[in-house]
Length: 259
Image (cartoon, rainbow, N blue to C red; front, side):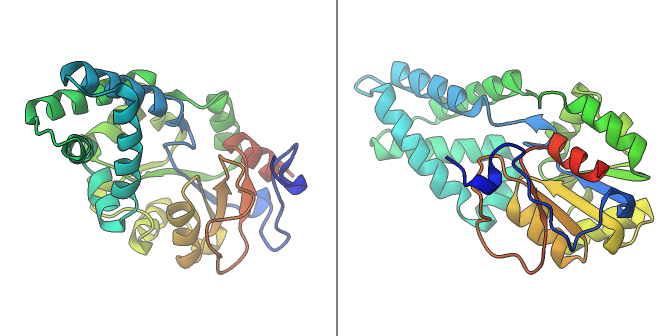
């Protein structure tokens, strides 16, 4: 159970931060902020585990699934692998699946390719908007003078998500790491977005679920930040240099800005 301070509304107001009237530019993350990228992950890997086990005699889907979790944690724990992997997710999945099969002393490059694409198809089909998020975006669009969507990842799949869900209409600027050539938490990524929005850092707020990219990065760039604590951790994974908002969803952030 989350601590008492996070029950119910699940947000804490930092008095040193500006209220909604002080925010002139709002920067929003995409995945796990506007889009629900979490719900289909376990199901997709379950399906891949069964797929691999069916193709390889002597392997049990449950054992494959355990190894997938282990290797996935290993892959994304390294900052450089994380940076290159998010720019080519299919290639990242090939690396993961190759190591999974190697753990069982199997080498099947054709199976790795099929399984990586199988996973990708499952993930794309399960992707959906966070509940009620279009209404929230409409409200924010009416309230905040300038808005930008700032997302990491490869150009083509991220742009496809924006178009699939009709999100561009809410933003003055859509910034994708693979198109710009730099991503969060790099200071230049935030500086570029602010230049396009013609906004100062001290009147801008970045909102997202990734603590390093969406909180530490913008704070270092002189902005305000709001962390969407999806898992109700209660405490951030590491200390921040100054105050930030903590909310449970983008809707809660919108309610906070109305005060």
